[in-house]
Amino acid sequence: WKRKRLPPGPRGLPILGNVLQLAASSQMWLTFDKWKYQYGPVMYLNMAGQDIVVLNTKAAATELLEHRSAIYSDRSRSIVADYLGSQLSMPFTRYGKSWQSMRRAGHAVLNARISAQYQPVQIEEAIILTHSLLCNTSSPLLAKINRSASTIISVIYGKRSLSLGKPEQEFDGVPQSQAPRVHEKLHLTSDPLQTLANIAHRFTNAVYPGAYLVEVFPILDYLPTALVKWKRDAQRDFKRISDIFERYFNDTVRNDQQRTSLCVRLADNEIASGLTDIEKAWLAGSLSVAALETTSTTLSFFLYAMILHPNVQQHAQAEIDRVVGRSRNPTFADMEHLQYVRAIVKEVLRWQPAIPLAVPHISMEDDWYKGYFIPKGTSCIPNVWSMNRDNDVYGPDADEFRPERFLQPSDKESGFVFRDEFETDDGHCAYGFGRRVCVGRHVADNALFIDICTILWALCIEPVVSIDSELNRPSKDLLNPIPNFQCRFSPRFPEVEEVLHYLRGDAQ
Ligand code: HEM
Image 1: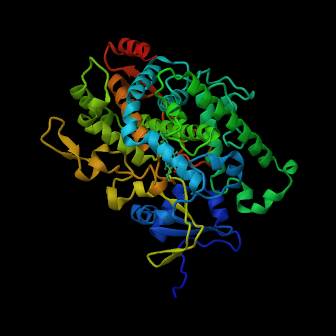
Image 2: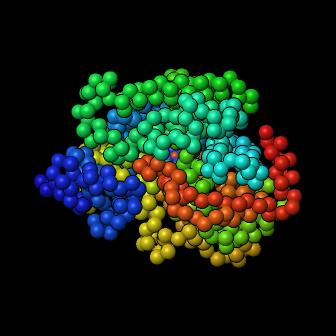
Image 3: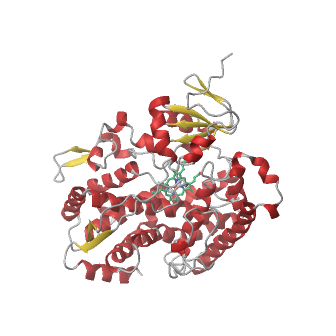
């Protein structure tokens, strides 16, 4: 007989538990980061009866979510997200047969080997992005960065298969600039990228703990639909999202001339056996939703890091000049010689993970960890933010942006190589854990490498006005909010604009 001792955690109120403390904090990971010093690696919270265990160290997350993944791979039931279609959406669907079919198909089209086949498209998209950063002076920086995610969208929906409209034009009459910062309603735009990004926010906002009262008091779900706006909105948005995903999927399968897109591969029955046409359309849609904001958030933080740390920028550019030179653009063949650039990719993902609390894993059986009881149905939150800034792992300067932490001196011309432990290890936990680890991580790593490398090869990045701390995102969201900053891009050598223009023409 073991006494069922729960892990330590902040004291809550009767019935409500820690609801009020959690509802009050907008970036929950910062609150958890503080509590971690008080309560240790595994911390217990209660959301009006829902058990929550926050995993504050990589060791705890690895032990539970990876080594015991057979019983830690479910997802939580979110009533609002269910109405939105979360059971068709791989990141949010419950563990079971349907998820297994999605995951198998996702892995087949995104594994490390297949990811290499998307590299030519990724190089072209990196050029289009870099050209737009330099030459498109009319769009705001964030809009340009968001378009950078077209690298991923081209992988999923084929090169330019979706007709890209003007970002500001709206279908539902609300200009994007005036769209509310909390995504309780889906805003459709004529721009597929923006629409997909809005769908992503609709989901990540719905699953943010405490965003909807009905998640805390499920009885509210029994109120008649006519009386509850959130339910009507969610049901209408499900239909809209489904229509969009099906249209994008079918258009791509019809229009992708080069037949290299992920949709075309999915349409091939062998890879996605067990999935209906609608499930395939949702799989492609949910992959793009999972890919878009995570990639553009990471690239935004890369630019932010470059204006904060001009020395890192110079260091990387010296490496690129040595390895690539100026007469051609970087390619993936340069990757193994660009150790410093690769270290920058790792460091951005460590310093500012796009989803600082990953996505909670639900435990499927009662379990014990270091003498503490973890009841079946517990929502286990990997506190990636704190893991990535663990002083015991990264040293006392873990809060700083310093790519050198992954490198060690060598006799090579570059002067350094990866430290042995980071040659194969990510060096961060930004992609999550176990059976639910990010299925798109190989494609994401490649996109980040080639985008970052091409930008640094071609452009100098400087701040424009003082950096302010206002955030660009609704604060109650799973995604890491991007600081409101602007930067100026100038060519690094006289021929840059002409070369980019030429390459861009070729790419398009
Ligand atoms: C910088 C880019 C990215 C970051 C930081 C990121 C991060 C994450 C994280 C933290 C999770 C949850 C893992 C867990 O539950 O333990 C996840 C899941 C997922 N990611 Fe990514 N991701 C990125 C890019 C992508 C891309 C490019 C794709 C697709 C092409 C993608 C598709 C997915 C999917 C489908 C899941 C759900 C997996 C499942 O539940 O089985 N992600 N990602």
